[in-house]
Image 1: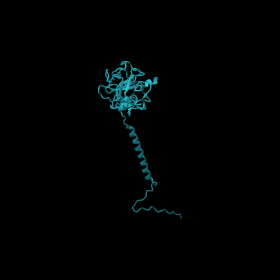
Image 2: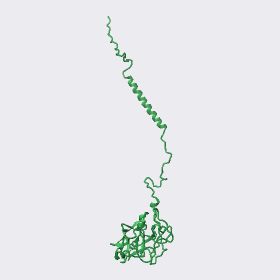
Image 3: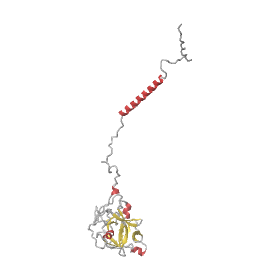
Image 4: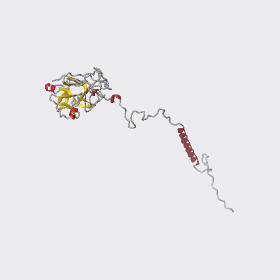
Length: 290
């Protein structure tokens, strides 16, 4: 009699009547969902890339700045200074003119008004009578000039912006002081003579025979040693100031440097296009204090 192999009973139905689908492998639904999500992600990325390539960024129509249109040099460029900051003082001559004025300071010693100064220095131009200095460039002067003209060799030198103070030899140096007593007045009185290094310019001799000269750019009184250096250090050329009746005194061996006071000390300083510099370097020749 053949042996009958018992068959397993069919899968029992769940209580809700659902029975698992045995026609496919378990987990197929999840794999299908994951694959669909991956395909959708790839399609979205490809679409985004295609759209971005079709709509490139708008390029500005304005041309880029080039070195040829820039006023500064190359990559290491600096802002070009304005005309008011770079205005150089014009070269001076002994005659007054609209382009290269100097002060026509005449003293009793015979100084030629038409001789040309050997040092072709830089000096500011004069302004009309009573005019205040300009912030940009010194105004032009007339052919007659506006510099004060001392009539004697004995003169005192007064500051424009400190009219109560005068050049005064104190401790060997020249300072800007108010007169006090007869000795102070004598030390504030000078003999204006022909320039030791240039007869068209001027030198200042003290009452004891010394001369005012610059050394280390400070103005002081020293004895004349007869050297060429001393003569040049003691020679100053008058240039017309932008203040009416005043002069600026330029060094003959340092063109472009003028005598000015700082902290009431007289020194030789390069020209600066500023109201303060023009005021500090403007002086008037007045009657001697002594």
